[in-house]
Length: 61
Image 1 (spheres, rainbow, N blue to C red):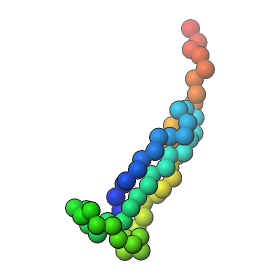
Image 2 (image 1 turned 180 degrees about the vertical axis):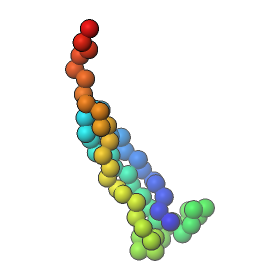
Image 3 (image 1 turned 90 degrees about the vertical axis):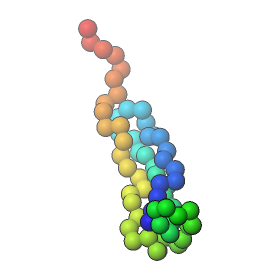
C-alpha cells in the first residue's frame, strides 16, 4: 500500500503551478514496514497541477 510521506507546496501562488507528492510503499495501512515498490499494485500520481486561478495584479474599483 502506498502512503503519502511528503506533500510539497504548489510551485506558484497563483496561475498554474506544479505540486509534488512523495509516496512510499508499506506492507499495510497499519504497518511501518517499508517494502519494494513492485509489491504495491498502483502508484498514485506524483505530480499534479495546482492553483488554477489567475494572478490578480490589482482590483478595479
